[in-house]
Amino acid sequence: MGIGCGYLVRLGLYLQGVTKLTVMAVQDVPDPKNPATWSFQLQTTWHKGSDDVTSLPSLKAKAVNFAEPFRSANLWIPEGTRLYENKLSYWIPIPWDDHNGRITLAGDAAHPMTFRKLLLQNLASVLFVS
Image 1 (cartoon, rainbow, N blue to C red):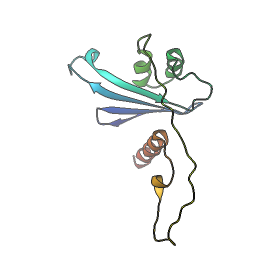
Image 2 (cartoon, rainbow, N blue to C red):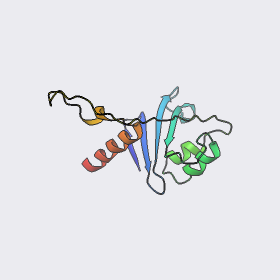
Image 3 (tube, rainbow, N blue to C red):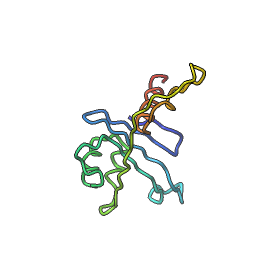
Image 4 (cartoon, rainbow, N blue to C red):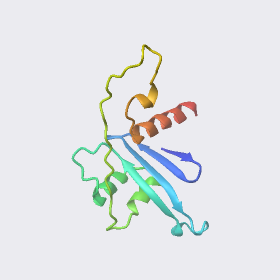
């Protein structure tokens, strides 16, 4: 499934097995009539487990089951392209003084929120509304 955010960003969600979220963002379009000149940023995220997330063959194995255009975009990454791991951190919220209820901290400000969870929640909202 792909959800459009204008022409600049596309989000894809893969729900079989381990949930994966893939993002494709346009970076440069030197010639709008020639897609071969366009460059993109691709990001695919999933729970790491024991995977080597910097392995291009591992990413391509996952991408085989993606919908288009995410499938082709990931499979066409040139051999030898370096992949990077973006480690996300999490911290345990601690109790705080709300001054007898006069100060309220709510929502995402009250706990850590990774971009993946936020994107999935936004995607769920878009799907629900449409």
